[in-house]
Image (cartoon, rainbow, N blue to C red; front, side):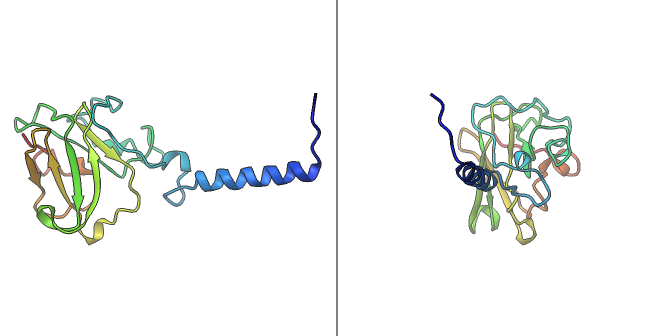
Length: 166
């Protein structure tokens, strides 16, 4: 049997559904479609990231209008001290103070390819963000100066050593 709904009921249902969709799919970055800004991040054991170690900055493709899937606001690659072997399944933490002091802003897991990435559009780098990378063995390495942005490969591997920890 078919059930008939009044026009008023259908209009009200459509209105409620549109509000629900708008709330769930609100863009986190003004002017960027929500499907490109949903918060996501790399995880231990994942192999979804490309084996881009040493090739190019992740954010150069994973940006609004870029060819990469999704938008990254933080991204990079981690190596062992030989600077060629990926250091997989570690952790990267971002603090407001040097040497792991201040407030912990974000923790991102390094995947099994050696990459880390996340969409954290509200992280304010102008106030100083200090990264720390930790290997699976518990070794830690802190960045001495504050990071200027989340595109770690814009300096590391170019004007600075690649990100590395044993």
